Image (tube, rainbow, N blue to C red; front, side, top):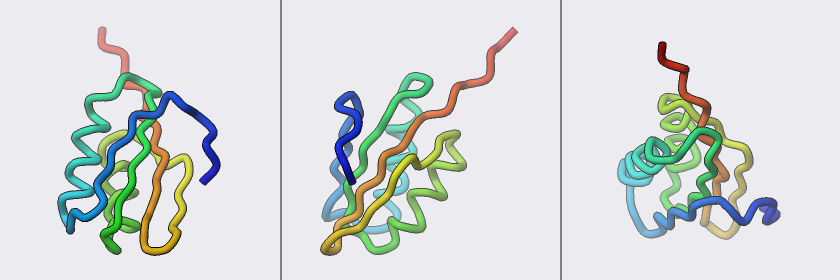
Length: 85
């Protein structure tokens, strides 16, 4: 994955097993401001399924994803929260 943005918060979850990578990604995403970026590193094979699913449920989207030598990297953007009246 090309380094396109240096302002992404890094979340290193290498070595953690399911369901921890998805749960921690979801928690970190919730703490980001609107349109904040999160870069997640994970080695759990299920993270390629679990993290995108958790991100979609938490109100974000995966901007980029790649896997190389058993490591998975995700660039995730927090969606804007609905305006409250």
